[in-house]
Image (cartoon, rainbow, N blue to C red; front, side):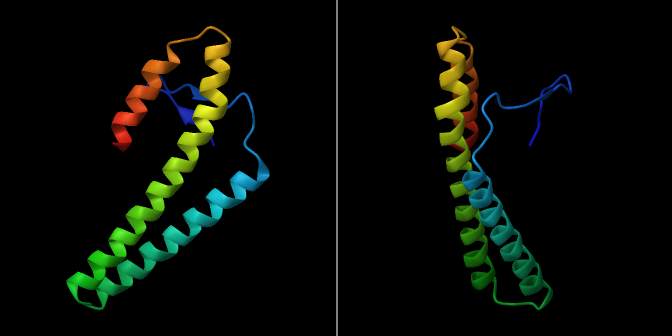
Length: 102
């Protein structure tokens, strides 16, 4: 998927993601979407708050797992490639990303 910079420029990975990784991430995202739809129904049905919160924690965990998978992919491909090409500005980008997920 394309990344939009602050200028609106769309960037793409130099090394494409593997089909296996794409399938895994897609499956995980679809599962999280299903969980969110279930949570919406729980709220509509006035289900107990503690049960809703438990399901929300499960979705947060699932989304965090996807973030870790993509972060690992980013470090192993994009970051390594840019550092090998002499572009050390990528370190600042990684630090900013880590702050978002810390």
